[in-house]
Image (cartoon, rainbow, N blue to C red; front, side, top):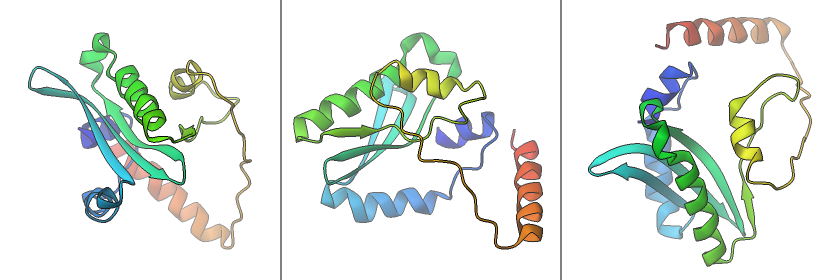
Length: 147
């Protein structure tokens, strides 16, 4: 499901081995959870959560557009919040909210849950401008082919 969602939004998804390692190493410690939203036998949304020292981190998530009326994203967010509260976690970190000066639907989704928007800054140190230009061009080329 994540592969399909990330292909749709044209963002590379890390290799499956990252998720397998999270499950294998962190799940037994109670630090990794994968939630599925399902309608009957069909998965319509997924959310991976990392937990550490009272912080629940929204890691990778995705829902299918054709199932938008089911509001799987809201269901998954609510479960992350309620299960975190039940475990005694005090913070839900939704992760990034995009650039403040650009429209970003994900930020709108996250904002409806309240909380504080923390802007840690967007400074980038570039030790090799040539490598940065090449990697940026490569990333954009890969995004074009993700369909």
